[in-house]
Structures are given as structure tokens and as C-alpha cells.
Image (tube, rainbow over the protein chains, first blue to last red):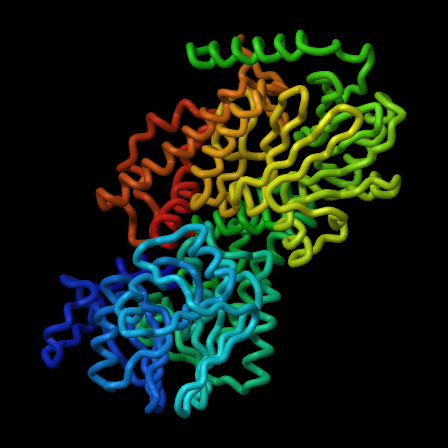
Length: 323
Length: 312
């Protein structure tokens, strides 16, 4: 699920400068007919041997070594083959591993092109169970599963996977690329800012009951490994530095402070609902009370009172039922 | 009262009559917060909830204790009916508002039973008010006591990841907490339905209907008390039972949601933020359902958009 706030673009896209794409005319625009300067897909080098591949609003990454390639989410049947071609432009090495970040079809479909060349697919064990429980033909099922940690070493590079319990999906893992020391986060936080409004305030696949513990563990990882930079799994919502209005940004990489900010975000919204209930407000009135008070309105990027009400209904339910 | 609700009311009366006629009559005196529904089968009421319990000559089987205060009343209500001890407490799922407060029963030696995924959730997200299960099961568990049985069936994720279907035998009564509520098929009480699992909901209802038919289930037991039309322009508490056809009716509600979302996606009526554009939706199929709230439809449908996009 895209974590970014695509809707923001509808108001702002016309005001952004148009960037000519003449040098890569073969790549269609992401939003043709608008002035948003983004191509439909894009490959960027972010460190020695480390590349990101963005297709539409989704981003994945791959690591090139002299012994083969490690790639993460293939994204979709449309994106997977294009990603394969983008890798071929950089290296003749085969793709040896595909590592899934979580089990959602919109990130992990399209791996067949890699399976065909012999890649080994790796996923957290609950992801594998999800894909068996609810299969989709375009999703390649994993060959290797693991519980809380797995490490792929290839050439002079490594990709580590950490499972900290349910967060977004019940099996999402965070990935650490070394020696570049880059943290890859999908759907749970996105550079440059952790205070963005929820794309989906009904937070269907998010597990608020475990979010604070998840981000606390993630924060510990960031500190222990001295991680400074995060790669985002999506384009992202943030403020336009010129107009200071909410807009879409690439969000390819950004500071690891996004982890602390998202921890603060979750803590703040859960605490807000609990405090209102503790003050004696009836559960069904909590969302209106919080919106009337404008709580966090100046803190959340892309704040929307309608979405805040839905979010707070959810947080009230969390306080009362544990989910 | 329209024709449909008249049919439902008559069917409900028929179910109640059949229940009353099939076994011994109700005990002469019952606590005010307790309903007798069949021989040895009762519902305890508190705070808008109903919890099923079975009284036998060899002990009592209790389900969802609700919370500490309610559980104390629950214990007293049982003591007013029988001297038998509570032997088992069974959790229907993991939501705290149903399963807190079992200590009053475990202090008497009762064992707590829950589906394995519920136990896992209690470990992941502990609440001191929830007593951890002593016994867990995977797909099926049978508690037989004094000639009566409470069968527990886990049919996959539905409302949360571990909701357990209760079947009281030989009365042939089924309870599906939070998902299927007398008297009529309804909107979910809470439209924020992240704990409704669209990826397995159709399979769940198919399995429940097959189970009910196979086991000759006669009626559905309520797990809530809500105010419903009394047919004379007023409101009255919802009845404790409904005909077994309620399962199919409730399945139909969810199928209407699936269909509306599928159509909206096919016709390009899903917004850039994945909310279905409500003005493009034919609301008529939703309106007959109890508790229909137009303003809650986008929240419910957004959940199902996620299912079609993400598979979860």
C-alpha cells in the first residue's frame, strides 16, 4: 500500500515547474498531462553498487556485486520485467536473490522474470504463510523463509533482514544494506518526514497495537548500527521548500530521523485517544473532541480533519479492544 | 414494519417456539441479567454484550467473561441457577472488551481455553485484565460435560485472526460473536473494520453455512443487545436468537460490499487515495441492512479496496 499522500498532488501539481525529459523520451511520464516532473520509472544509484528502482509511486532496490545481484520487491507484473532490463543496463551478472519486504501483492507481484533466470526467493515465514493462505498467480512463493533475522552475503555486499513483529502487514521486515549502511523501509515510514498524514486512515493493514514497540526496536537498530540514511519504498508527502505547501517529493533517500518521527507520530496519536478516554469522554465522541481541539493539526503534514476522525475512531477501538 | 422485517420477526418467533418446545422449559426464576434459551443453555447480559454459558450436572462452561465487573455479576448469575462449579472459560476471540475479567472464574479452578492465534496475540499484546489461556487449539476443540457439549470451530481469519464459532449441543445453537447478530443482517457495529479480514471472509461464511447444515443447527445466538424496531413504531431490545438463515443474510451483506468495490474498481471509481467515490455507488443494496449508515460506507469499502490491491 502506498504510504504517501498522493491526493496532495491534485491541488499542487499545476504549480510545479515542468522538467523536460528529452534525454529519456522512451520513458513515459508518471502523470501525463500534468506538470509533475516524474517519469513512470527511474533507476538511481544511491551508493557503491546500490541502486533504487522506482515504478510509479513504488520503489524497490537492488545491489550489484561481481558475484551476482540481490534485488528486493519486484513490485508488479508490469514493473518486474522493466526492473530486470534496468539491471541489465548496469551489469551482466544474474539476479541471484529476490527478498520480499512484506506480503502485499502490490509490492511482491511480478517476480517470475527473476524466477525464470534461477533467482532464489526469500521472505519472512509469516509472509510465506500469507501467500499460501491467499495466493496470487503473479506472486512467486518464497524458497527460503526465516523468523526474525536473515542475511544474504554476495561478493562484497550484504543485505540483512530484521523482523520486529507485526507493523504494516504481519510480516514486514526492514532491510539493511552494507557496507553502505542504508536502511530500506517500505510502507511504515518514508523520507523525508515521519509526520505525514495517513494515506489510508482506516489503516487496514497496519497494526497500531504493536507500532510503538516496532518503532522502538527499529530505533534501537538505527542507533546500534549508526544508520544515517533511509531509502523510502515510495514517493513521499512533504512540504515544498519554496511554497511551504504539502506536495509530492521523490523520497528516494533521507535522514534516519524519519524513524524517530514516526515513533513520535504513533505515540502521539495513541496517547491522544487514551487521554481523551481517561478524561471521561464517551468513546464515540473521542474523534470529534480531538479534531475540535485541533490536536496535532499543525504537526501532521497533509492534516485532514476527516482522515483524523477516522484515525481516531481506530485509536479509540485500539484502547478498548486491543485492536 | 416492511415485508422483509415481518418475515424475519415471524421466523424469529418460530425459532423461539421451536427452541422452547424442544426441551425442558425455563427455570422458574432467573436473574434479571440472564436469559434461558434452551435446556442448560443461557445468555448472560452486561453492557450491551451477551455471553453464552452452559449449565450441566457436571459443571458449567462459560464463554467470554467481558470484564472484571461484569464477570463478578456473571458468576453471581450462574450461582443463582446452579451449585455446579465453573469448569471452563472459553474466549471467542482476542478483543479485550469480550475476554477480560476471567480471574473470578479461574480463582475457582476453571481452565481457560482459546484458539492458538488468540493466545499468540495475548502474548504479543498483553493486557493484565486478560487471563492467559491454559488450553489452546488449532481448528477444533470439544468440551463435553454432563451430557452437553460446546464445540469450538476455527474457520480461519474473519473478525480478527482467531474468532471461534461456538456450537452448543444437543441444543443445536450457534454463536458467532460480533459477526452474526440477531435479529437481522447488519452493518458492522464499528465501521473501522481493520479487523475484518476480507481475504477469508467469503471462505469463512461458506464454511459456517456448511457446518450449520451438517450439524443441524437450529438457531443463532446473539452476542450483543441492541435496540431494534418493535414493529409498532417503537424500539425494543434485540432478541437472543434468530433463525439460522441469518448466516446467509449476513454473508449477503459482505458480498454486496465485495461486489460494489469490484464494480467501482472496474469502472474506475476508486479515488487517488483508494477511497471509493461514493456518488458513483448504487446505495439501494445497502439500505435494507440494519444500522445502515451512508457515512460509514467509505470506511468499510476502503478496507476491501485494500484487499483487492494488496491481497490482505
